[in-house]
Image (cartoon, rainbow, N blue to C red; front, side, top):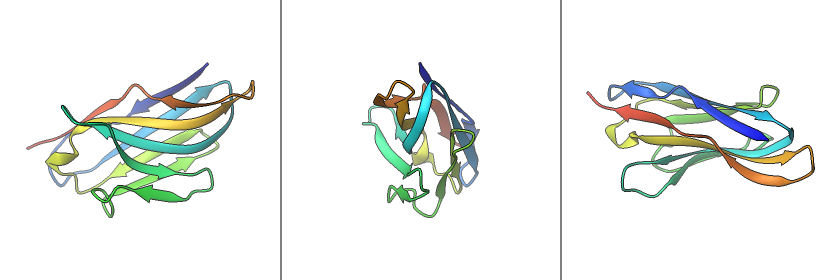
Length: 120
């Protein structure tokens, strides 16, 4: 059993900041790529940022220069620091991780999602 639990969402004014966290737990042998996705109402889920187990990062053009993804491998946790937030960043944010479990199986896992609302 593997779980991803997100935290840190909420309501923030335009121009503000939030930090999301996602902690993995369970029968984990290794975690490869970790990522953040988001889904706004009536939109498709879109990739926000990824980070490899070596620390290489990629970002959607819409968040480059404003968001920073990082991870703590010892804590099995990925973070998303979001600065200069805009109303169009409003969405449910989901973390995702490619995990090899202790029985040798590799699968994609998802968190339950955390709401981020940017509004004055």
